[in-house]
Image (tube, rainbow, N blue to C red; front, side, top):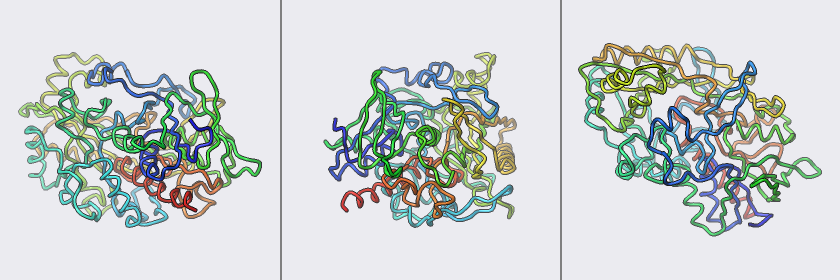
Length: 494
């Protein structure tokens, strides 16, 4: 490995892998540093007990909550990052998400550019991640240049029946854009993919798509088991001159021309703070966002759910407004199939026969509303610990959204609808801690993801997102990374 590569990318998740894919064709020497290792082919990847009850793939890392109590944050460290266990929903932000939007409890600010600026990079990301979907199925879908690369993942018969029942209430379900080759996935085992780690068996994630495309080029090297512990600047405090990491008990240093930080919104902010880098806007670590999210189970004893993967449609009828002329609420989508073992893992002391009965007669949903940026919602360092201080926002919208889907499912013939708000200490869609903006006094990055303070530093994971919107962030992260790669290519050519 060269000690002075042109580019060092820290992290191989969606941001890092997509950036590497965009830069690899330049021929520039690129080193990707990944804290974790590749998930083994023989890992217990399809065992719900090992995954959902015993957390086989979670690290033993702990953070502190607002009150100083330790908790396990639900972060995964392996090649491909958190995408190895994601639900593979690769959906664009709506065009309206790029403009200022008034919510019941505040304002979601405008991005420094409109949707049309990112649209070509969304299309590039959809090609890279081989997205399956139907543009015409969602009335809120922003403008596309053609269809998705592949047709949608088909509903299973039980799910098609639920979709029809929901449609009869006047609601319009749409085909979720998914990064899943369903035939290949099911060859590896009869499970869903949502929450299950992929062992290169059909899920389109950061490893199987972005990283694979990058590593097809000889100028790209991946170093696993490499935990980055610091960034250093030169005498002027501007350019990043050293990346320091530990591997196998030894400390190593790289002196790159360009550094891209893609370790995840919390870890990227923490590394910048740990390194003591200049932070002229005082925005690094601030405006942490994480979707307000609730899981719902709609139960009907007459309904028989024999689906395997389930997660094929969503509902955006209340995305841009509440349907009654009021402010926006959010997105609904199916969860991956909640089998009895998963239900028992989340509802302790539930007897297995009852869990099996409920699972066999229920449909599982996920309600998600936007978390609004708040400078006091932030990541700080408490000694050597990361402390997550999350100020929940927009809960009026979340509660109304849950009420809307409850009423819809009851009208669709599911008499019992139970919901549970996700624990705020487990950030599943973390974003916003190193945000882009047009004003250096109010943002950490310029609109192309370059640090205002450090001209050779880019941040291209979800930390760069200025708003959370109310849809899954993965595709937007990929699009932002590909756009940043275009900027870096111009730097290399200069």
